[in-house]
Image 1 (tube, rainbow, N blue to C red):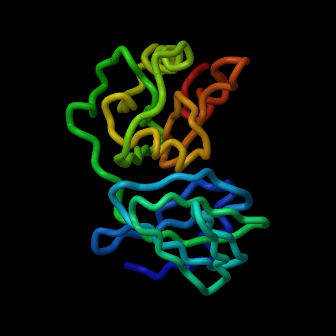
Image 2 (image 1 turned 180 degrees about the vertical axis):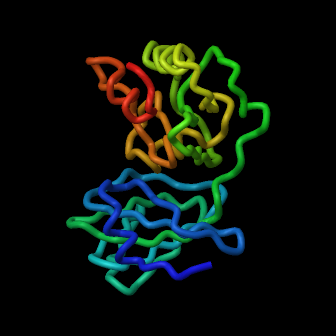
Length: 216
């Protein structure tokens, strides 16, 4: 148990729209996130969200209206309500929300599946965490990039948890929440969401190998 310096924590965050878990209490997670642009409209079926502005300001847009949230103010978005945060300049936000729903034990396996999309990758030098939610699925994951991602991990004997978006409710919603787009496959490495390929160019072998501490 120790105090947390919010400014210091935010100073270590260099990406946008990627929440970092700062603490947990009473079944809630405290997340820090930096925004600097418009997110996508989305909603959460199973949890409310609280947005507290520490620095800057952002506009919370709903389908029928919007509200500006200034530094020192917060807003609670009820579950099921479509919304999107829009920041015209860098904004520091503290999020309060329940932990994502757990993944069924049947999906926590290293056994390859026919369909792949999001991978929680474990390796000797990297602590990993996968975050998921519950809603509905919109993507068709049986694509070559997903198969190549599996081959990359399997050939290097890296243990991982494979999340199948067609059988895990809300996986698509969570991908959009953490990456701002509907793109697969995704790796989640030490809580960070990483797209391991560039559309039209292919899999990022060297970058993924560097991140995971293995040979390309």
